Amino acid sequence: MVKRSCPSCGPELGVEEKKGRGNPISVQLFPPELVEHIISFLPVRDLVALGQTCRYFHKVCDAEGVWRCICRRLCPRFREQGSGVRPWKRAAILNYTKGLYFQAFGGRRRCLSKSVAPLLAHGYRRFLPTKDHIFILDYVGTLFFLKNALVSSTLGQIQWKRACRYVVLCRGAKDFASDPRCDTVYRKYLYVLATREQPGVLGTTGSRACDCVEVYLQSSGQRVFKMTFHHSMSFKQIVLVGQETQRALLLLTEEGKIYSLVVNETQLDQPRSYTVQLALRKVSCCLPHLSVACMASNQSSTLYITDQGGVYFEVHTPGVYRDLFGTLQAFDPLDQQMPLALSLPAKILFCALGYNHVGLVDEFGRIFMQGNNRYGQLGTGDKMDRGEPTQVHYLQRPVALWCGLNHSLVLSQGSDFSKELLGCGCGAGGRLPGWPKGSASFVKLDIKVPLCACSLCSTRECLYMLSSHDIEHHPAYRDLPASRVVGNPEPSLGAGTPGEVAWACEEYLSQIHSCSTLQDRMEKMKEIVGWMPLTAAQKDFFWEALDMLQRAAGAVDPGSPTPES
Image 1: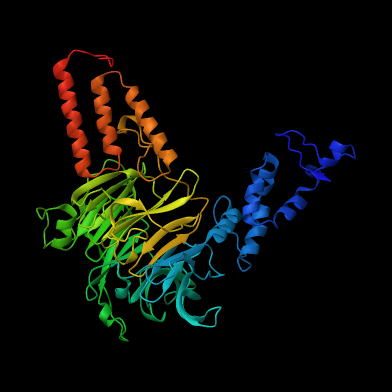
Image 2: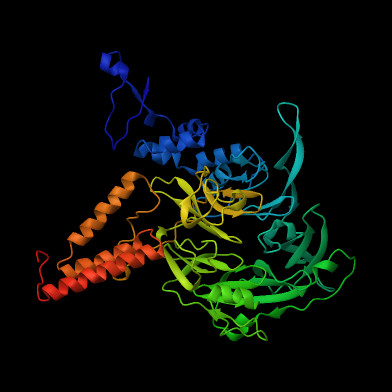
């Protein structure tokens, strides 16, 4: 009999030892290479569970040799060592957790389906659905083209299936983009930012790596256009903005500068060569000290997040400007590229930009919404527009945030690492599963979320969720300092189990009880009302009622300092 003997746990008696039929053999007597080889045949889920039993098995199961064998079993064609501190473990988990899931809004079957998984893909980093197909970028720069096709079902019938076949579109890709509108019907072309080897100039030997933008037809994957930049310019992100005839390509350099060029999409399929002008965007000209970290765009606006967490807006049409800011006072139709800074209380980590509303997430995990709220897409509990960032108090530390035409989605994670999807706004067409009439507050949607879901996207026909786990991508949220806490950010009376709601109520009561005076208790109760998932009218009612009680108590006994009064 082989027995586990862990120094931290002490010796464990085996069955034979208890019956006096011989001494057990400790697994620690075996060569470490043999133990690692045996353990490497376990499924990933069982390997992780075994590593949680004791210190010895945790050390053995965490060895790079074990994860190298698992990685080669999961991806037989992946032979190169990946990057990072733990390259083989990272590569194995990336490929074990990769997946693209989707749920169609129409039809009788409303269940989560999984797309085909390309064997060559090294994890999933980004995805984008277009009019007919889906494109996925992996962690080594390979862009995959997932096609919809007619396939035969188990009953012998022919059915239309999404993302059931795949081909490699290109390699060396850094980023890609398409028409920024929510409706995939407009996504005719795919713009790919890639690195290509260019032959050296006359009189030199060798080649140079140059960044370029390649344009593909989304329907067939055929390349119709290519523009190459000077080798001294290196880009990391591309977004599109504007109409088809004046499509602006915004390119973010490694140094944080924004360049733009304009193309006419209606002429891309014509076989001709012409020169386009690459110019520095006004946000980089007017604010040269700023380094932009990432961008987001829609058809008529662009949002920039700097490396210091600042947010700047470009709005190009008066209608969207009015929806976002509630006024046209600062809008200049002759200077639409002038960046407008948003006033925010903390550093912004990421954002989601819809047609006329925006969602922002700061370093403390707080969610701020701004813009048009006609359908309740801001999740504030009412349908009043917000001209400045407004915090959604009952939601914190989201995994992902997405804003569409007139609804918003939040991917959240519980304390047990389970995921759930929350949504608000218009529910027409099934876009909020389980809530056909929509909701002005974020509500839990009737959809099963994969354990490792990390990003999402919604179209008119489908809801997509990308599954991938990168062990080197640690949560970036910080705890809110006590001096900046308004109420307690942890307890929530919103979405949650009855036990969690009861715990939140007890926590709020303990906070009120800890106050030394009646006035402090009243102020604490006002703060707690602000954290509760109530509508604006309900909050105004409670706040006014508390003010009346506070004034009445002060008139009866203004000098009483103790809670017993």
